[in-house]
Structures are given as structure tokens and as C-alpha cells.
Image 1 (tube, rainbow, N blue to C red):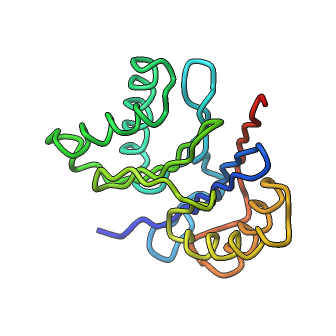
Image 2 (image 1 turned 30 degrees about the horizontal axis):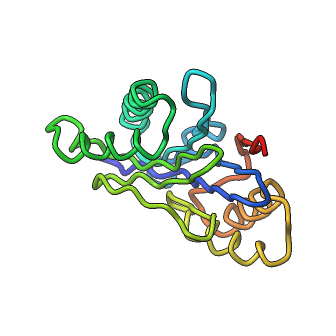
Length: 181
């Protein structure tokens, strides 16, 4: 069975704004199957959480749906909802086999949810996952010293990742939140 590749998701939190950006490429082996997939979306009843996924699409949508249910159950508290989802992910036989990772963010926190059921909070406000994630992460960390705007950092870092990673392209989807304060 050919291996599916694709997806670079990057998040930058800076100066009261958080941005999640994802590329659009889905590859199978050496073939680009789709150049404009949407891997970033809003979650929660009022769109108060933004997120992006890497991995199997059906698995990621299952996790997004479950995270939305947890957000509703816990009154929009992202950290609590993510921890509860991670507990389910580790203990449920069905969920344990899902092959996906997610970056999710609200006004206060950015989290990486791994396929092992881990919940990780990056301490510097920059997080990335997927086949080009390390390239985007390195570029964003370098740009943080020179750019003030989270969206600009994300766009430039994704452009760099797209130039380096053959499984990443420059057709991006972006979502952002600005803090009310």
C-alpha cells in the first residue's frame, strides 16, 4: 500500500494574536493527489478555537468532532477539553488506532495533541507538525527575532518550508484569533 504524505501545520502566538496555517498538499508516494486540501479550521460553537491536523484525514475529523464535544462539555475550556480528549485517546480501543496529530489554539493557549495521547504546550508560542513541520518550525523560530506580526511569521515560514519539503506546497489556509484585551 502506498504511503500518503503531506501536511505542514504551523502556529505562532505573538503580541495578542495566534495564527494557525496549513499547506494544501496531499501526496501519495511521489504523486501530488491534491494541491488545495483544507487542513485548518475553526472549532467550538462560536469558533473560539482554531486548529490544524496532520495525518489521516478521516481520523483527524473524528478527533476534531470529539474535541468539539469536549469543548461544549467543558464550556469552551481548551486545556481541559484537550486533556479529556487525550485521556480518551489513550484508553479507547477505537481512538488508540487513529493516526493523526493536531495543533489547536484559543486566545490563551496553543496545544499539540499527538497520536500517543500527549498534550504539549510549546513554551515559546511556536508549534509545528507534519512532514514539513520541522522546516516551518525552524524558520518561524528564526523569524520571531525579526518580525512582530504572527501572520507574517507564519506566511514566511510556510513559504520557506514549501521550498525545502517536497510534501509541502504554498497553497495555504490560515485562521487567526486576536485576544480581546
